[in-house]
Amino acid sequence: MALRPPHDVMRLERMGSFHQTRLSFMRALLRFLKKGNWQVERTCWDIDIQGVGIAIYRVSGPEHIYSLLCFANDLPDEKRSDRVIADEWDASFVLFDGVPAKADITRLKRNVPKQEAGHYTQKELVLSRANRSVRLFEHVVDSLSSGRQPDLKKMDAVGYLMRTTAVYGNGKFGISDRERIDCRPEFRGPFRAELLSVWLIRAFTVDIAEHLANLRGGSRAVKLDTEIRRRLGIGNATGLGMAPFLVLHPALIHAWMQVRETALARVRNIERSSSEIIRGFSILLSRAMLGVESWTTADPRQQKRIEKLKHDLIQLAAYVKTPGLNMPYPWDSLVDWSAQNLTLEGQELVVSLVMEPHGELIDELAEGMSIDESRYFKIDGAQKISGALEFIQETYPWALNIDYSDPMSIARFWYVSEEKLEPRLGDRFDEPGAEKEHPLAYARDIDRLYRDLMIFQKEHSDDPVMAEFLLAYPMHRHAVRRIQLVGHFPYAEIQDNLISQSMLPIDLLRCKLSFFGANKFDPKSDRWVRINMYQHAPFPDEFSHMDEDDWIYPPLRSSWR
Image (cartoon, rainbow, N blue to C red; front, side):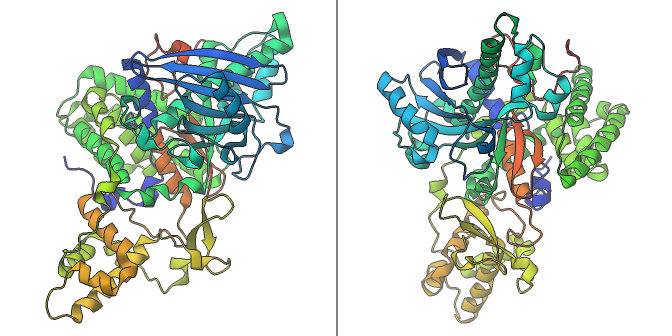
Protein backbone atom coordinates (compact mmCIF):
# COMPACT_ATOMS: atom_id res chain seq x y z
CA MET A 1 0.00 0.00 0.00
CA ALA A 2 1.25 3.48 -0.83
CA LEU A 3 1.64 6.07 1.89
CA ARG A 4 -1.28 8.44 2.31
CA PRO A 5 -0.62 11.51 0.14
CA PRO A 6 0.54 14.79 1.68
CA HIS A 7 -2.52 16.64 0.38
CA ASP A 8 -4.60 14.38 2.62
CA VAL A 9 -2.34 14.13 5.68
CA MET A 10 -0.91 17.65 5.85
CA ARG A 11 -4.16 19.54 6.36
CA LEU A 12 -4.63 21.29 9.69
CA GLU A 13 -8.03 19.78 10.37
CA ARG A 14 -6.59 16.26 10.12
CA MET A 15 -3.32 17.12 11.89
CA GLY A 16 -5.40 18.56 14.73
CA SER A 17 -7.08 15.15 15.08
CA PHE A 18 -3.89 13.11 15.57
CA HIS A 19 -3.55 10.76 18.52
CA GLN A 20 -0.43 9.27 20.05
CA THR A 21 0.98 6.09 18.51
CA ARG A 22 3.51 3.52 19.65
CA LEU A 23 6.07 5.58 17.70
CA SER A 24 5.45 8.62 19.93
CA PHE A 25 8.55 9.94 21.66
CA MET A 26 7.55 9.09 25.24
CA ARG A 27 6.90 5.47 24.37
CA ALA A 28 10.07 5.11 22.30
CA LEU A 29 12.03 6.56 25.23
CA LEU A 30 10.64 4.09 27.78
CA ARG A 31 11.32 1.18 25.43
CA PHE A 32 14.91 2.36 25.09
CA LEU A 33 15.38 2.75 28.86
CA LYS A 34 13.96 -0.71 29.56
CA LYS A 35 16.08 -2.36 26.87
CA GLY A 36 19.23 -0.71 28.27
CA ASN A 37 18.34 -1.63 31.88
CA TRP A 38 18.52 2.00 33.02
CA GLN A 39 18.19 2.45 36.79
CA VAL A 40 16.55 5.30 38.73
CA GLU A 41 17.16 6.13 42.39
CA ARG A 42 16.20 9.04 44.60
CA THR A 43 19.51 10.21 46.04
CA CYS A 44 18.36 13.27 47.98
CA TRP A 45 15.15 14.23 49.76
CA ASP A 46 15.19 17.35 51.94
CA ILE A 47 11.68 18.85 51.89
CA ASP A 48 9.96 20.30 54.96
CA ILE A 49 6.33 20.25 56.12
CA GLN A 50 5.62 23.39 54.08
CA GLY A 51 6.68 21.57 50.92
CA VAL A 52 9.90 23.57 50.53
CA GLY A 53 13.25 22.00 49.76
CA ILE A 54 15.16 19.89 47.26
CA ALA A 55 14.98 16.37 45.84
CA ILE A 56 17.36 14.68 43.40
CA TYR A 57 16.65 11.69 41.14
CA ARG A 58 19.56 9.93 39.48
CA VAL A 59 19.06 7.90 36.30
CA SER A 60 21.98 5.67 35.31
CA GLY A 61 22.58 3.97 31.98
CA PRO A 62 25.36 1.95 30.37
CA GLU A 63 27.42 5.03 29.51
CA HIS A 64 25.91 8.12 31.13
CA ILE A 65 24.30 9.34 34.33
CA TYR A 66 21.78 12.18 34.59
CA SER A 67 20.29 13.88 37.64
CA LEU A 68 16.96 15.66 37.94
CA LEU A 69 17.17 18.36 40.61
CA CYS A 70 13.76 19.36 41.97
CA PHE A 71 13.34 22.62 43.90
CA ALA A 72 10.01 22.68 45.76
CA ASN A 73 8.34 25.94 46.76
CA ASP A 74 5.42 26.98 48.98
CA LEU A 75 3.46 29.02 46.44
CA PRO A 76 0.31 30.90 47.52
CA ASP A 77 -2.79 29.97 45.52
CA GLU A 78 -3.15 33.47 44.09
CA LYS A 79 0.29 33.25 42.46
CA ARG A 80 -0.36 29.94 40.73
CA SER A 81 -0.67 30.53 36.96
CA ASP A 82 -0.19 28.61 33.70
CA ARG A 83 0.81 31.79 31.88
CA VAL A 84 4.34 32.18 30.56
CA ILE A 85 4.61 35.58 32.28
CA ALA A 86 4.53 33.91 35.73
CA ASP A 87 7.75 34.21 37.73
CA GLU A 88 7.06 31.78 40.58
CA TRP A 89 6.02 28.13 40.58
CA ASP A 90 5.30 25.30 43.02
CA ALA A 91 8.37 23.49 41.74
CA SER A 92 11.22 24.08 39.31
CA PHE A 93 13.49 21.46 37.77
CA VAL A 94 16.73 20.99 35.90
CA LEU A 95 18.13 17.87 34.24
CA PHE A 96 21.87 17.84 34.98
CA ASP A 97 24.47 16.02 32.91
CA GLY A 98 26.11 13.72 35.44
CA VAL A 99 26.13 13.82 39.25
CA PRO A 100 26.08 17.38 40.65
CA ALA A 101 28.71 18.38 43.17
CA LYS A 102 27.79 20.47 46.23
CA ALA A 103 28.89 23.60 44.40
CA ASP A 104 26.60 22.71 41.48
CA ILE A 105 23.64 22.18 43.81
CA THR A 106 24.26 25.52 45.52
CA ARG A 107 24.53 27.29 42.16
CA LEU A 108 21.42 25.62 40.75
CA LYS A 109 19.39 26.26 43.91
CA ARG A 110 20.08 29.94 43.36
CA ASN A 111 19.25 29.95 39.64
CA VAL A 112 16.75 27.23 38.68
CA PRO A 113 13.77 28.71 40.60
CA LYS A 114 14.32 31.87 38.51
CA GLN A 115 14.02 29.79 35.29
CA GLU A 116 14.77 32.05 32.29
CA ALA A 117 16.15 34.76 34.60
CA GLY A 118 18.83 32.40 35.94
CA HIS A 119 22.38 31.67 34.73
CA TYR A 120 23.34 28.23 33.46
CA THR A 121 26.17 26.14 32.05
CA GLN A 122 26.52 23.39 29.44
CA LYS A 123 25.92 20.80 32.19
CA GLU A 124 22.26 21.81 32.39
CA LEU A 125 20.26 19.97 29.72
CA VAL A 126 16.61 20.76 30.44
CA LEU A 127 14.79 23.43 32.46
CA SER A 128 11.21 23.04 33.61
CA ARG A 129 8.68 24.28 36.13
CA ALA A 130 5.31 23.01 37.39
CA ASN A 131 2.30 24.04 39.42
CA ARG A 132 0.05 21.92 41.57
CA SER A 133 -3.44 21.06 40.40
CA VAL A 134 -5.68 23.29 42.51
CA ARG A 135 -8.47 20.70 42.29
CA LEU A 136 -6.53 17.55 43.10
CA PHE A 137 -3.21 18.02 44.91
CA GLU A 138 -4.57 19.14 48.27
CA HIS A 139 -7.38 16.57 48.10
CA VAL A 140 -4.87 13.75 47.64
CA VAL A 141 -2.62 14.98 50.47
CA ASP A 142 -5.59 15.43 52.80
CA SER A 143 -6.98 11.98 51.97
CA LEU A 144 -3.70 10.14 52.42
CA SER A 145 -2.91 11.97 55.67
CA SER A 146 -6.29 10.79 57.01
CA GLY A 147 -5.58 7.19 56.10
CA ARG A 148 -7.83 6.87 53.07
CA GLN A 149 -7.40 6.76 49.30
CA PRO A 150 -8.51 9.81 47.28
CA ASP A 151 -11.88 10.05 45.56
CA LEU A 152 -11.65 8.23 42.23
CA LYS A 153 -14.01 10.57 40.41
CA LYS A 154 -11.81 13.52 41.33
CA MET A 155 -8.75 11.56 40.26
CA ASP A 156 -10.30 10.75 36.88
CA ALA A 157 -11.51 14.31 36.32
CA VAL A 158 -7.98 15.74 36.58
CA GLY A 159 -5.49 12.90 36.07
CA TYR A 160 -2.36 14.60 37.46
CA LEU A 161 -1.06 16.23 40.64
CA MET A 162 1.05 18.86 38.89
CA ARG A 163 1.32 20.24 35.39
CA THR A 164 4.38 21.71 33.78
CA THR A 165 4.06 25.12 32.19
CA ALA A 166 7.32 24.89 30.25
CA VAL A 167 9.95 22.28 29.41
CA TYR A 168 12.96 23.98 27.83
CA GLY A 169 15.84 22.29 26.05
CA ASN A 170 18.29 22.84 23.18
CA GLY A 171 20.23 25.85 24.40
CA LYS A 172 17.28 27.84 25.71
CA PHE A 173 18.44 30.54 28.16
CA GLY A 174 22.04 29.34 28.03
CA ILE A 175 21.59 25.65 28.84
CA SER A 176 23.26 22.95 26.73
CA ASP A 177 22.71 22.86 22.97
CA ARG A 178 21.21 19.64 21.68
CA GLU A 179 24.14 19.07 19.33
CA ARG A 180 26.35 18.45 22.39
CA ILE A 181 24.33 15.38 23.38
CA ASP A 182 22.45 14.18 20.28
CA CYS A 183 25.18 11.63 19.46
CA ARG A 184 24.39 9.79 22.70
CA PRO A 185 22.16 6.76 21.98
CA GLU A 186 19.59 7.71 24.63
CA PHE A 187 19.05 11.15 23.07
CA ARG A 188 19.10 10.38 19.35
CA GLY A 189 15.32 10.45 19.18
CA PRO A 190 13.47 13.80 19.24
CA PHE A 191 12.95 15.51 22.60
CA ARG A 192 14.17 12.55 24.63
CA ALA A 193 16.06 14.65 27.20
CA GLU A 194 12.95 16.75 27.77
CA LEU A 195 10.69 13.70 28.07
CA LEU A 196 13.10 11.94 30.41
CA SER A 197 12.77 15.00 32.65
CA VAL A 198 8.97 14.87 32.48
CA TRP A 199 8.91 11.16 33.42
CA LEU A 200 11.04 11.86 36.49
CA ILE A 201 8.97 14.93 37.39
CA ARG A 202 5.90 12.69 37.44
CA ALA A 203 7.56 10.55 40.10
CA PHE A 204 8.40 13.66 42.13
CA THR A 205 4.77 14.87 42.10
CA VAL A 206 3.61 11.67 43.79
CA ASP A 207 6.57 11.52 46.17
CA ILE A 208 5.97 15.04 47.49
CA ALA A 209 2.23 14.45 47.94
CA GLU A 210 2.91 11.26 49.94
CA HIS A 211 5.66 13.03 51.90
CA LEU A 212 3.39 15.92 52.94
CA ALA A 213 0.61 13.48 53.83
CA ASN A 214 3.01 11.52 56.05
CA LEU A 215 4.19 14.69 57.83
CA ARG A 216 0.60 15.78 58.45
CA GLY A 217 -0.93 12.44 59.35
CA GLY A 218 1.88 10.61 61.06
CA SER A 219 1.00 6.99 61.76
CA ARG A 220 -2.47 7.40 60.21
CA ALA A 221 -1.08 8.33 56.80
CA VAL A 222 -1.07 5.87 53.92
CA LYS A 223 0.57 5.79 50.52
CA LEU A 224 -1.30 5.84 47.25
CA ASP A 225 -2.53 2.46 46.10
CA THR A 226 -0.19 1.40 43.25
CA GLU A 227 -2.99 1.13 40.67
CA ILE A 228 -4.44 4.49 41.66
CA ARG A 229 -0.97 6.02 41.54
CA ARG A 230 -0.46 4.73 38.02
CA ARG A 231 -3.65 6.54 37.02
CA LEU A 232 -1.78 9.81 37.53
CA GLY A 233 0.21 11.36 34.72
CA ILE A 234 1.95 14.69 34.55
CA GLY A 235 -0.08 17.58 33.23
CA ASN A 236 1.17 20.19 30.82
CA ALA A 237 -0.09 23.58 29.72
CA THR A 238 1.13 24.55 26.25
CA GLY A 239 0.43 27.70 24.29
CA LEU A 240 1.37 29.52 21.11
CA GLY A 241 5.08 29.29 21.85
CA MET A 242 5.04 25.75 20.49
CA ALA A 243 2.83 26.35 17.44
CA PRO A 244 5.36 27.63 14.85
CA PHE A 245 7.71 24.69 15.42
CA LEU A 246 5.97 22.60 12.78
CA VAL A 247 6.44 25.40 10.24
CA LEU A 248 10.01 26.33 11.13
CA HIS A 249 11.36 22.76 10.98
CA PRO A 250 10.01 21.40 7.70
CA ALA A 251 12.61 18.65 7.15
CA LEU A 252 12.15 17.38 10.71
CA ILE A 253 8.36 17.38 10.44
CA HIS A 254 8.64 15.45 7.19
CA ALA A 255 10.72 12.84 9.04
CA TRP A 256 8.06 12.52 11.73
CA MET A 257 5.19 12.32 9.26
CA GLN A 258 6.90 9.95 6.88
CA VAL A 259 7.76 7.53 9.67
CA ARG A 260 4.17 7.64 10.92
CA GLU A 261 2.76 7.06 7.43
CA THR A 262 5.35 4.35 6.67
CA ALA A 263 4.35 2.49 9.82
CA LEU A 264 0.69 2.70 8.81
CA ALA A 265 1.50 1.45 5.31
CA ARG A 266 3.44 -1.52 6.71
CA VAL A 267 0.45 -2.53 8.81
CA ARG A 268 -1.95 -2.08 5.89
CA ASN A 269 0.29 -4.40 3.84
CA ILE A 270 -0.26 -7.33 6.23
CA GLU A 271 -2.10 -9.90 4.16
CA ARG A 272 -3.44 -12.02 7.03
CA SER A 273 -3.67 -11.54 10.80
CA SER A 274 -3.81 -14.29 13.38
CA SER A 275 -6.85 -14.84 15.55
CA GLU A 276 -4.68 -13.94 18.56
CA ILE A 277 -3.87 -10.49 17.16
CA ILE A 278 -7.51 -9.90 16.25
CA ARG A 279 -8.61 -10.83 19.79
CA GLY A 280 -5.93 -8.52 21.17
CA PHE A 281 -7.17 -5.71 18.94
CA SER A 282 -10.71 -6.18 20.26
CA ILE A 283 -9.43 -5.87 23.84
CA LEU A 284 -7.38 -2.85 22.87
CA LEU A 285 -10.48 -1.21 21.41
CA SER A 286 -12.35 -1.76 24.68
CA ARG A 287 -9.51 -0.13 26.58
CA ALA A 288 -9.48 2.81 24.15
CA MET A 289 -13.22 3.24 24.74
CA LEU A 290 -12.53 3.48 28.48
CA GLY A 291 -9.89 6.10 27.78
CA VAL A 292 -12.27 8.19 25.69
CA GLU A 293 -14.97 7.90 28.38
CA SER A 294 -12.55 9.48 30.88
CA TRP A 295 -11.55 12.27 28.47
CA THR A 296 -13.16 15.44 29.80
CA THR A 297 -12.96 19.03 28.63
CA ALA A 298 -14.85 22.28 29.09
CA ASP A 299 -14.10 23.32 25.50
CA PRO A 300 -17.34 23.12 23.45
CA ARG A 301 -15.60 22.28 20.16
CA GLN A 302 -13.53 19.48 21.66
CA GLN A 303 -16.46 18.18 23.67
CA LYS A 304 -18.49 17.76 20.48
CA ARG A 305 -15.56 15.94 18.91
CA ILE A 306 -15.33 13.60 21.89
CA GLU A 307 -19.02 12.80 21.69
CA LYS A 308 -18.69 12.02 18.00
CA LEU A 309 -15.60 9.94 18.75
CA LYS A 310 -17.58 7.85 21.21
CA HIS A 311 -20.10 7.17 18.45
CA ASP A 312 -17.23 6.35 16.08
CA LEU A 313 -15.91 3.76 18.51
CA ILE A 314 -19.33 2.13 18.82
CA GLN A 315 -19.36 1.80 15.02
CA LEU A 316 -15.80 0.48 15.09
CA ALA A 317 -16.73 -2.12 17.72
CA ALA A 318 -19.56 -3.30 15.47
CA TYR A 319 -17.18 -3.52 12.51
CA VAL A 320 -14.72 -5.63 14.51
CA LYS A 321 -17.49 -8.19 15.09
CA THR A 322 -17.94 -8.63 11.32
CA PRO A 323 -15.71 -10.98 9.28
CA GLY A 324 -13.71 -7.96 8.04
CA LEU A 325 -10.60 -8.61 10.13
CA ASN A 326 -10.52 -12.24 8.99
CA MET A 327 -10.39 -11.28 5.31
CA PRO A 328 -7.22 -10.56 3.25
CA TYR A 329 -5.51 -7.27 4.12
CA PRO A 330 -7.71 -6.68 7.18
CA TRP A 331 -6.04 -3.49 8.41
CA ASP A 332 -6.10 -1.86 5.00
CA SER A 333 -9.82 -2.61 4.76
CA LEU A 334 -10.36 -1.19 8.24
CA VAL A 335 -8.52 2.05 7.46
CA ASP A 336 -10.49 2.40 4.21
CA TRP A 337 -13.75 1.75 6.07
CA SER A 338 -12.88 4.38 8.69
CA ALA A 339 -12.22 6.97 5.98
CA GLN A 340 -15.73 6.40 4.67
CA ASN A 341 -17.61 6.16 7.97
CA LEU A 342 -15.84 7.99 10.80
CA THR A 343 -14.95 11.55 11.71
CA LEU A 344 -11.35 12.70 11.34
CA GLU A 345 -10.92 12.22 15.09
CA GLY A 346 -12.12 8.64 14.71
CA GLN A 347 -10.06 7.98 11.59
CA GLU A 348 -6.85 9.06 13.29
CA LEU A 349 -7.61 7.00 16.39
CA VAL A 350 -7.98 4.00 14.06
CA VAL A 351 -4.51 4.81 12.68
CA SER A 352 -3.17 4.65 16.24
CA LEU A 353 -5.06 1.48 17.13
CA VAL A 354 -4.07 -0.58 14.08
CA MET A 355 -0.38 0.14 14.74
CA GLU A 356 -0.61 -0.99 18.36
CA PRO A 357 -0.45 -4.80 17.95
CA HIS A 358 2.42 -4.62 15.45
CA GLY A 359 5.41 -3.38 17.42
CA GLU A 360 7.77 -5.96 15.94
CA LEU A 361 6.97 -4.58 12.49
CA ILE A 362 7.19 -0.85 13.14
CA ASP A 363 8.99 0.04 16.39
CA GLU A 364 12.41 0.29 14.77
CA LEU A 365 11.07 3.18 12.67
CA ALA A 366 11.05 5.38 15.80
CA GLU A 367 14.83 5.61 15.60
CA GLY A 368 14.56 7.43 12.25
CA MET A 369 12.65 10.49 13.41
CA SER A 370 15.60 12.86 13.68
CA ILE A 371 17.34 14.64 10.82
CA ASP A 372 20.22 17.06 10.24
CA GLU A 373 18.27 20.04 8.93
CA SER A 374 21.39 22.09 8.18
CA ARG A 375 22.17 19.81 5.22
CA TYR A 376 19.19 21.24 3.34
CA PHE A 377 19.63 24.94 4.02
CA LYS A 378 21.66 25.73 0.92
CA ILE A 379 19.74 27.13 -2.06
CA ASP A 380 20.30 25.52 -5.47
CA GLY A 381 21.03 28.57 -7.64
CA ALA A 382 21.19 26.42 -10.78
CA GLN A 383 17.53 25.45 -10.63
CA LYS A 384 15.70 26.45 -13.82
CA ILE A 385 12.87 28.93 -13.39
CA SER A 386 10.65 26.80 -15.63
CA GLY A 387 11.22 23.82 -13.32
CA ALA A 388 10.41 25.89 -10.25
CA LEU A 389 7.17 27.13 -11.81
CA GLU A 390 6.13 23.63 -12.76
CA PHE A 391 6.87 22.35 -9.25
CA ILE A 392 4.81 25.11 -7.61
CA GLN A 393 1.90 24.43 -9.97
CA GLU A 394 1.95 20.73 -9.11
CA THR A 395 2.69 20.98 -5.37
CA TYR A 396 1.04 24.21 -4.23
CA PRO A 397 -2.34 24.47 -6.00
CA TRP A 398 -3.92 24.89 -2.55
CA ALA A 399 -1.79 28.02 -1.98
CA LEU A 400 -2.30 29.50 -5.45
CA ASN A 401 -6.08 29.17 -5.17
CA ILE A 402 -6.38 31.41 -2.09
CA ASP A 403 -7.65 34.97 -2.61
CA TYR A 404 -5.13 37.06 -0.67
CA SER A 405 -7.00 40.26 -1.46
CA ASP A 406 -9.73 39.03 0.89
CA PRO A 407 -9.03 40.47 4.37
CA MET A 408 -10.21 37.20 5.92
CA SER A 409 -7.37 35.37 4.16
CA ILE A 410 -4.68 37.57 5.72
CA ALA A 411 -6.41 38.47 9.00
CA ARG A 412 -3.63 37.19 11.27
CA PHE A 413 0.12 37.78 11.55
CA TRP A 414 2.76 35.92 13.53
CA TYR A 415 5.34 37.83 15.56
CA VAL A 416 7.77 37.26 18.45
CA SER A 417 7.02 39.04 21.73
CA GLU A 418 9.73 41.37 22.97
CA GLU A 419 9.16 40.52 26.63
CA LYS A 420 9.33 36.70 26.49
CA LEU A 421 10.78 36.07 23.03
CA GLU A 422 7.80 33.76 22.43
CA PRO A 423 5.71 33.44 19.22
CA ARG A 424 2.42 35.29 19.26
CA LEU A 425 -0.49 35.79 16.86
CA GLY A 426 -1.86 39.26 16.11
CA ASP A 427 -4.91 40.63 14.33
CA ARG A 428 -3.61 42.42 11.25
CA PHE A 429 -6.39 44.99 11.09
CA ASP A 430 -6.98 45.63 14.80
CA GLU A 431 -3.52 45.41 16.40
CA PRO A 432 -0.21 47.18 15.74
CA GLY A 433 2.96 45.29 14.80
CA ALA A 434 2.18 43.75 11.42
CA GLU A 435 5.36 45.35 10.05
CA LYS A 436 7.29 42.94 12.33
CA GLU A 437 5.54 39.89 10.94
CA HIS A 438 7.44 36.63 11.30
CA PRO A 439 7.77 34.70 7.97
CA LEU A 440 5.34 31.86 8.67
CA ALA A 441 2.77 32.64 5.96
CA TYR A 442 4.27 30.29 3.38
CA ALA A 443 1.05 29.93 1.39
CA ARG A 444 0.96 33.67 0.70
CA ASP A 445 4.75 33.93 0.24
CA ILE A 446 4.88 31.13 -2.32
CA ASP A 447 1.97 32.68 -4.19
CA ARG A 448 4.00 35.93 -4.35
CA LEU A 449 7.07 33.96 -5.42
CA TYR A 450 5.10 32.27 -8.18
CA ARG A 451 3.82 35.57 -9.55
CA ASP A 452 7.29 37.14 -9.59
CA LEU A 453 8.78 34.02 -11.18
CA MET A 454 6.20 34.32 -13.96
CA ILE A 455 7.13 37.97 -14.52
CA PHE A 456 10.85 37.21 -14.49
CA GLN A 457 10.46 34.37 -16.98
CA LYS A 458 8.49 36.57 -19.39
CA GLU A 459 11.24 39.19 -19.22
CA HIS A 460 13.88 36.68 -20.37
CA SER A 461 13.94 34.92 -23.73
CA ASP A 462 16.06 32.04 -22.41
CA ASP A 463 15.25 29.84 -19.41
CA PRO A 464 16.99 31.69 -16.53
CA VAL A 465 18.17 30.05 -13.33
CA MET A 466 17.24 30.74 -9.72
CA ALA A 467 20.48 32.59 -8.92
CA GLU A 468 19.62 35.21 -11.53
CA PHE A 469 16.10 35.54 -10.17
CA LEU A 470 17.28 36.02 -6.58
CA LEU A 471 19.68 38.75 -7.61
CA ALA A 472 16.65 40.67 -8.82
CA TYR A 473 14.21 39.48 -6.11
CA PRO A 474 16.24 38.75 -2.93
CA MET A 475 13.12 39.03 -0.75
CA HIS A 476 12.09 35.57 -2.01
CA ARG A 477 15.09 33.66 -0.67
CA HIS A 478 13.14 32.02 2.16
CA ALA A 479 10.32 30.93 -0.17
CA VAL A 480 12.78 29.55 -2.77
CA ARG A 481 14.57 27.60 -0.06
CA ARG A 482 11.19 26.29 1.03
CA ILE A 483 10.07 24.95 -2.33
CA GLN A 484 13.44 23.32 -2.94
CA LEU A 485 13.28 21.60 0.42
CA VAL A 486 9.71 20.41 -0.15
CA GLY A 487 10.95 18.90 -3.40
CA HIS A 488 12.98 16.49 -1.27
CA PHE A 489 10.49 16.15 1.60
CA PRO A 490 6.84 15.95 0.51
CA TYR A 491 5.47 15.96 4.09
CA ALA A 492 7.37 19.14 4.98
CA GLU A 493 4.59 21.62 4.22
CA ILE A 494 1.35 22.21 6.09
CA GLN A 495 -1.15 22.66 3.28
CA ASP A 496 -3.22 25.42 4.83
CA ASN A 497 -3.20 29.19 5.12
CA LEU A 498 -1.63 29.97 8.49
CA ILE A 499 -2.73 33.62 8.56
CA SER A 500 -6.41 33.19 7.69
CA GLN A 501 -9.13 34.20 10.11
CA SER A 502 -10.35 30.59 10.31
CA MET A 503 -6.96 29.05 11.13
CA LEU A 504 -6.92 27.36 14.57
CA PRO A 505 -3.47 27.31 16.22
CA ILE A 506 -4.75 24.55 18.52
CA ASP A 507 -4.45 22.15 15.56
CA LEU A 508 -0.71 22.86 15.33
CA LEU A 509 -0.32 22.30 19.06
CA ARG A 510 -2.22 19.05 19.10
CA CYS A 511 -0.33 17.63 16.14
CA LYS A 512 3.05 18.21 17.76
CA LEU A 513 1.92 17.01 21.17
CA SER A 514 0.54 13.79 19.68
CA PHE A 515 4.04 12.97 18.46
CA PHE A 516 5.27 13.52 22.01
CA GLY A 517 2.71 10.95 23.15
CA ALA A 518 0.24 13.25 24.91
CA ASN A 519 -3.43 12.49 25.38
CA LYS A 520 -6.54 13.95 27.05
CA PHE A 521 -6.28 17.19 25.04
CA ASP A 522 -8.22 19.91 26.88
CA PRO A 523 -8.20 23.18 24.91
CA LYS A 524 -8.60 26.31 27.00
CA SER A 525 -8.93 28.46 23.88
CA ASP A 526 -7.89 28.11 20.26
CA ARG A 527 -4.37 29.11 21.39
CA TRP A 528 -3.49 26.95 24.38
CA VAL A 529 -4.23 23.47 25.65
CA ARG A 530 -3.80 21.28 28.68
CA ILE A 531 -2.73 17.67 28.24
CA ASN A 532 -1.73 14.60 30.21
CA MET A 533 1.57 12.76 29.77
CA TYR A 534 2.68 9.32 30.99
CA GLN A 535 -0.72 8.49 32.44
CA HIS A 536 -0.81 4.73 33.27
CA ALA A 537 2.92 4.42 32.54
CA PRO A 538 5.18 2.58 35.01
CA PHE A 539 6.91 4.62 37.69
CA PRO A 540 10.68 4.23 38.10
CA ASP A 541 10.24 1.78 41.01
CA GLU A 542 7.97 -0.40 38.81
CA PHE A 543 10.10 -0.32 35.70
CA SER A 544 11.85 -3.63 36.21
CA HIS A 545 8.67 -5.73 36.47
CA MET A 546 6.10 -3.80 34.38
CA ASP A 547 5.56 -3.85 30.62
CA GLU A 548 7.15 -0.59 29.49
CA ASP A 549 4.85 -0.23 26.48
CA ASP A 550 1.40 -1.57 27.39
CA TRP A 551 0.15 1.47 29.26
CA ILE A 552 -1.27 4.05 26.89
CA TYR A 553 -4.88 2.91 27.43
CA PRO A 554 -6.40 2.18 30.87
CA PRO A 555 -6.69 -1.49 31.93
CA LEU A 556 -10.10 -3.14 31.63
CA ARG A 557 -10.06 -4.41 35.22
CA SER A 558 -8.60 -2.79 38.29
CA SER A 559 -8.84 -3.94 41.88
CA TRP A 560 -9.90 -0.47 42.99
CA ARG A 561 -12.77 -0.18 40.52
